[in-house]
Image (cartoon, rainbow, N blue to C red; front, top):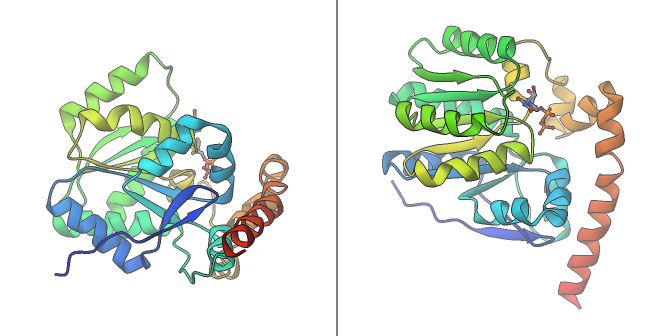
Length: 249
Ligand code: UDP
């Protein structure tokens, strides 16, 4: 198998990987086979906006081992910069990774969401993937003092892939605190994916998924989200247009 190398494009100072969906999975598989730990970030415009304000988070994005373009906002930004890129929804990428773990016998951990949600998500995943070995399941509501306990638990159990669902930037900040002591583990922040896998939250209708507008559907359903996300998107695209113009002229 050919050895895949990262090719990146910068958006407002944050590097995004330009792998196709399949190659991104292959890249992770390559690292799994070599027991190379990774931090995977599934990036969207809101996270870039946070990264511009929060240096720690910004650094984590740029130090990540794989930054996946998640949603139409990033796809459009890359287009503005002259790159045609496939949208890779984080939730689908994670599902593919789980199928790979089942196939190859890699253990996984689930950390995040409410207790009943993460338990139900684990149950559904086990039903769907009978050979999948889930060795760690823990909810995402804990104090800072508990972070050390979680780290020790994870180190003892040492799953090959840990899915962390605390929302951004919380999940990325926690991963960055843990990963140095778990150099063979792959961590990925998966936002609200456990809510979907538990069956408690439905994914957007397929037409939204196809257009990369799943975030828009969720935003319309949750007014609090609308206030948070919506103003950020046009502003983000204007900033990217200005950046692209500056690079050209
Ligand atoms: N969550 C958590 N602990 C917290 C805050 C949030 O486990 O302290 C979980 C929450 O239950 C949900 C997920 O993190 O399952 C965040 O989902 P959201 O849709 O807000 O994340 P996004 O996809 O927007 O990053």
